Length: 424
Ligand SMILES: Cc1ncc(COP(=O)(O)O)c(C=O)c1O
Image 1 (cartoon, protein in one colour):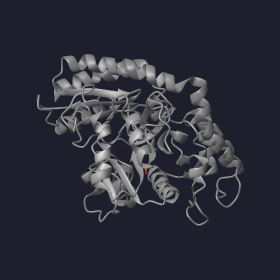
Image 2 (tube, helix red, strand yellow):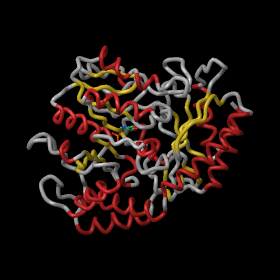
Image 3 (cartoon, helix red, strand yellow):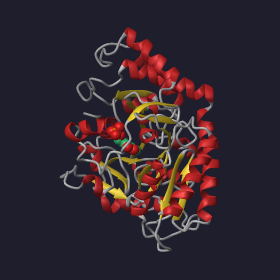
Image 4 (cartoon, protein in one colour):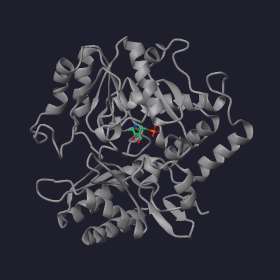
């Protein structure tokens, strides 16, 4: 029985539209090789995970070395050097006074923990998040996820969750235009607090750049204004860097673009270049509001994943991977915008660094071209390029390659995309 057949019989894939018909044999850098020996350029990085490249030799070597010493000890029962070293490093590389990390295994777990910590610190219970957001698949994180398609049939969700319109300039919820809008979408947070909550808000949780929501980059000044409103109400800012973090946007953490210090920052995906690990980090006074019994994770802070994360960050620093992402992303988006000029299907090209979205529309009214997006993804795969889809209407091509990708591969991807768009 081959892999596809085993999947059909034994893997529960009923929760996804389809698993891509690619059986991965091995991968390196931004290259994926299937079982038949066919080579693909990876423009999705396992949903924005292998930022330092598939099977980065330095990350793999660090993990192997750790495996020979200790695979599991439980970071919250015993002291483990790799956990301590990584926590120290994260305190150094995260913005502002963020200092103490709690480690888990996945993004949802990090966000759940951050929500719990925010409640503990503030003594409040409510949350505000953004429309179009995605924060994970647990009940708590789905409760603050602003997307019906992810929640349908899964409720009831947590009470005390309010939604604030996302800063989506291409589809502005207030039909305004930046900068004339004077950041109306950020200022309106006052009204969401006043009319959408019971005044008992622990935290505002937001992705600095929405990923699943279709690569929504807020306008300059947005997070500064949001923070001003939150500070007036004593509400914590939790920044979900699960997808935008680890160099993806051209800074190690996307919130650094705007010089705003979050109260809690969550991370996962790119933290260990594919080894399962997540963390939320907070200022000491916030972190220390946990009391014994409040939180734990059996696998959280797995030593192999922590060793991989340390090697990953060392690789980032030595190779200047954040700067690489910024430069490659700028050139990539310039080429995509050139393509947009002669291609009416492309409504918008947006992004930061190598977190890039191409929104396809059917007409001047911006009707989502969701079917065309599906076709383009399939055609790109046939041409040897793997991409993702996202956005509320599934019409945004998500281009989030490993940051080590060669610039020439990005230019080839644009040429392939031009052909695919002409074919749909
Ligand atoms: C911003 C964001 N937060 C949280 C998650 C959930 O992460 P995980 O699937 O590791 O639980 C995701 C996953 O796509 C994400 O993009």
